[in-house]
View 1: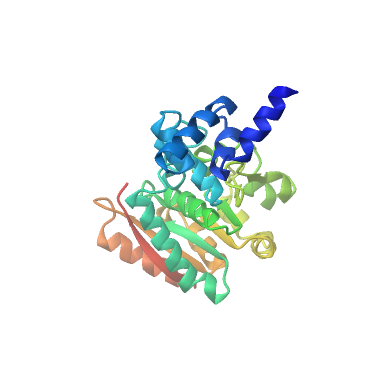
View 2 (view 1 turned 120 degrees about the horizontal axis):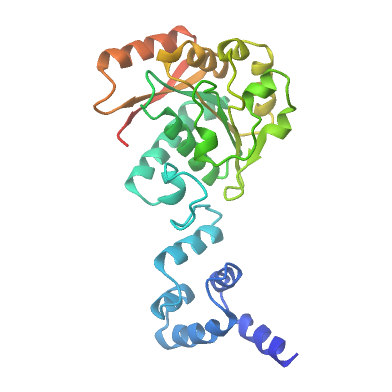
Length: 288
């Protein structure tokens, strides 16, 4: 009983950051006394005092600040997802600033016009469409937008690997009426606003599945629940899947890669996407 009284009195002076550090297991109740004393002596913030005492690292402090400001990101030690998720693992990097700039462009040119869905398209495999789609999904979710990422690449899907999805069912299974949609959705625990729909079972007829009427119905239904719907697509060179996906979503982000995509390839990509009736919202020159 006496220990509980001591702990409760000590915690009365602990800042909100201190409480989060305790909840996360970064510091112990015994550490708080030392931190509070150093904080008073130096006239500094609780987190800075804890760092000065060597009880937490700068990464620990940034992580707890992200929780305090409802800005989810992952410490490098968390290897649950692919390192390709730079928006999750390196949110303060110059690289991720580029994703936030692209996010702003999409918001001003597309979402603010009343649209919600768009497709990420590249001319060839290896140009980074899946990488761009995944990181865009993370930065939109960090903004507080309810985000759905759909892996529409039913030829060579990647999002299940990037996000370490456990379900075997996905988009193809929904379109083939093999599973209810809700069972195929995966809410990403570390990103409360992010839901991923994997490609599912690799089918022999992806193009025909996309052409079914239930795909536009799926997008329409998802639009009533989510703020943003991002569709990853196979390369244009693999077939007309990407054009069909872009046509259904009505918007497209074009992806090229430095020292990989030729000007002629990009021009052809632009023409094919415009030919599908989709609006080109923006273009990304990828250098990963």
